[in-house]
Image (cartoon, rainbow, N blue to C red; front, top):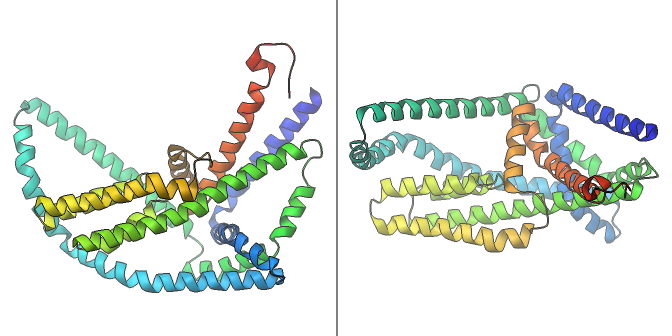
Length: 357
């Protein structure tokens, strides 16, 4: 029992020390966390090149350069489009809000007329209070994410350091795995290896698969809304696709924004139904084709759990917390499932005196 207590205390102290280190070093972690994320994402491509007898460093360099060229090309293509459409949308927004208000107010007034003056006053007070609190909380969280993420490292520093970190991690990925494996406790090596394998399967299945889902949804929404004739449809589709990495947020943004703009721009039921059809097609493809095929249902990450992890990470560590939220959620999920399996195999679950490991 004393040996078990010693091991438990050791790992709890190590976990606490790791958490405190992350908290203390959070101002300088962003380039290193970003480099680690890029290396993890690109490692399968480097592994494939090494099977063709290319040196590991050369494969890492080729993959990293190709990724950088793709990112630059994507930025050059998307930034002008987003800048022009979002700028035009911001300029037209006051007029759209006034038009939308004119269309909605008669319906709202007829509904409010059925309520007593006391109920109306209470409703307005509650709506104003909760809306103000929600907007203030969201604004503070976004401000914290941006300010803490870029407090000490500007964009230039991020661009310089992140590729260097990613290259060295890609080059030495195998050595790092072997070194980590050699440090595992001998007695529990198989259990830890199994947990690490499940964590890797969960992360790779979600991150790489979800990235492809976001790309496909961005194309579907952009092309569909543009074909319908919705102004700023391409920008809405691109933003909705990027936000789809966060469960529910991308679909809510696309549905609410596109329908509101359709009501203001067209004013007829045909175009509104066409916009709604584009949204429903995107949701159907995501739920029945893209997510099952590209992500799968075996990753073990519930959307609500991911959403909680992203908000918690952003609140605690800013932008760095958002980057590490999904990996931490995956690790926590695997450890919780492992603990549940051990609990169900123990005397605590079966109510017997014998303990099963």
